[in-house]
Image (tube, one colour):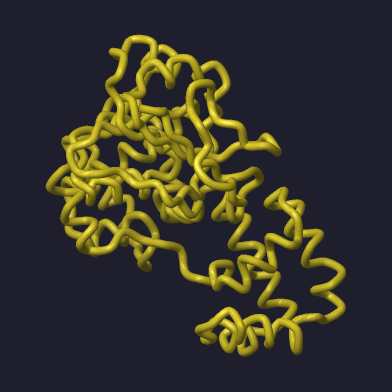
Length: 300
């Protein structure tokens, strides 16, 4: 079983969202996107993942939402400084499934450091930001972060960022850590996303998630087994993120209601959706991640 936390799902920009009263199938990934989906007041969200560690991470966040105030939640996860994260964790253990509780008891160091910053993506992003500050200095980085438009960022980038270290090592380190080309690096800089603070659950999103947390079903069995046992024409939206869809295509099509929407990140150059679904619009790059973000629909 993989124990590597693979977060970063909130950094994938998606057009597709759930709607009130819908049944949703979603990938767990970092968990925050799933919690945000509750703000749309769906009927139910079933959450699957091939990596059990991601399900345990979501279970931790759901338990924290149910049992804590918003400021304690942010403190536990690592969005606020804290010396008491292990004590906060002890307060929510009674809400965790047995497997999740056992997982986190063997990863208390991750709890202590704040789980929101301990995924593979988050660690690489933190290291790359340290490199940016090393190359350009804190004051220049802060001036860049204070810019509010893409035109301003492009202008400063052209005038001040083309140093020897940046030209020779920026793209190389970026490629090594994120496995995407340097053109994506520049786009994220110009969009203002590369140096932006990590997204966190807002207070209003937190309140709604607390109210509707019982509409989440965290599926502990492998995705293929769960999907095979579900009725046909039962899901309105599939928000699958970076979930590997290999071997799931037939069941996804069977479970989809006519008109069902799907979004996912594809590693295939053409971004072809599962059989039965029809791509909607042109696939877009997936931000920090390799591949393309694909939107598709099952014709009614």
